Image 1 (cartoon, helix red, strand yellow):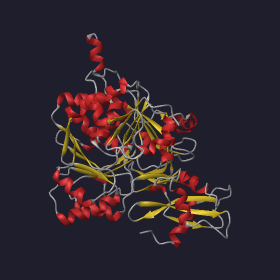
Image 2 (image 1 turned 90 degrees about the vertical axis):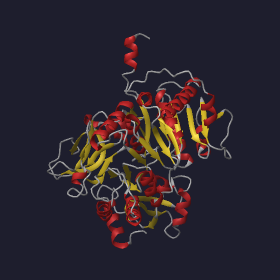
Image 3 (image 1 turned 90 degrees about the horizontal axis):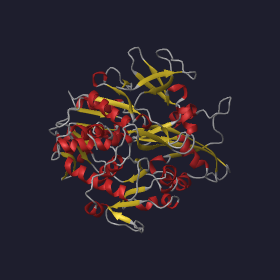
Image 4 (image 1 turned 180 degrees about the horizontal axis):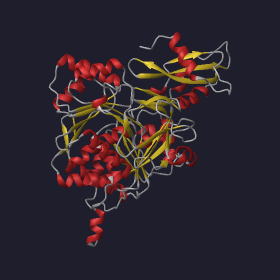
Length: 530
């Protein structure tokens, strides 16, 4: 390779190159901490390189897909960055989904490699049977029943025995990095294709806006890494030489969280509303010595009483909120800490490198205070939905990405989300799209029609509730019938927490169900769930 070609290769800002750059500069600095275990940048990079070599030797090529089904761990980070390093497209699978939901995403993305926790491996069986044989399958952890098939490699054994030969693949930053599935609003889930450049641009914007200083920063990873928000949250620290504290997925404990924040000297963290409520109570009870410099909330709305509690519990610590969606890599707006009190209820202003407008159906910008749809453009916009030209045509109409969020802007340029054009419910930080749940419930043989709405919940922010019209009014399906029907068809968090049987659904003159009327009816007749 001549000198100019060598220089060009090191100009890359793709995600695999960014990690290698940090490792060359600070090989002995901790990159991740989990419990009492530490993974340095040098160790992380070496293991990523060996895992990348395994993928290449198995025949995985740039542009092919690598599916990863794992809970938060050092090894999940290594699996993701190995895919990035070889130019493959990462498909992070949500471990909370049931088998047929996983199967759909695998059939759609057609991965040639699968890396999974052994305990989660059986849930991929349906998807694997619908695809040609994997070029390579790797599992982490002790085998469980159904978790071993011919040709499956053990994660640690494979890395220990892999060749040391470097993987020399030039990965352009404009190439796809991730296919992140977001639940479909009308039909099956769609895979948003995000590029290396879009993710790095998002990362650099976060570093500037939040004042992340690198080596002295410690991030607490509270979100699962299969979420694009969780995956993106660790990128500033991998790029700047800071480190992140990884915690296991699920089973949130405010007591353990606050102990971790103190023990590890965490400087930045983000949680959803109900978690902040419990964390603030624990801080007020134990009076820990915290090193926090910035905190934030996102993914789901936070009740006013929790916001007041955060301000009182964390005086002097900047509190910000983030808003966005998967297709935007994902953050689009941020409410700055300086406006935390004066602009409550707002999602703030567009972040660096994101342009936003609020428009009517003809793409005309609406006046201040009026409601329209938020549309975006900029380098963080997805390339498009995987294998879905029809959805892409609608999403990019008029040369802007259409968010589906109905918003207004005030005279200071702060944006307020008023409603969701596509009926998304955010429950405990998880996105739930009503049409998906409605489709499953409507397929029950005893249900003629079904509508799902989001209603307030004191702990989760929102929860899905179903209204059904039965086929036989004298023998309607019970709540237990509906829950059993959804058991293998929907992830647990998508299931309705209440089911109401009605003779008919309220409709407008065009025959469309009027969901606001159902929300009003619910609020007037039903106490909020505990």
